[in-house]
Image 1 (cartoon, one colour):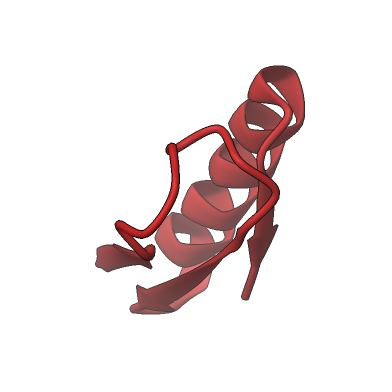
Image 2 (cartoon, rainbow, N blue to C red):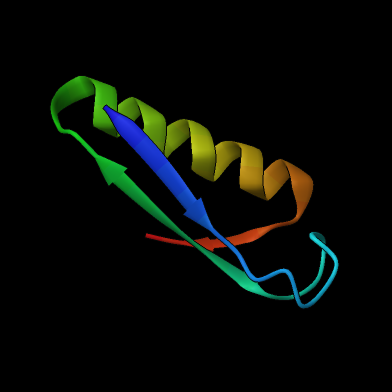
Length: 50
């Protein structure tokens, strides 16, 4: 399983830009990675898209 986060370096990492996340892999590992990233992004106030 691999997770890739793409972000623009035009602004600060805590800006209102939406980050796009690609999780490559499936099953429980991919689901766990998506859940963990979603929880952490909410805790840090980041907007991510899958």
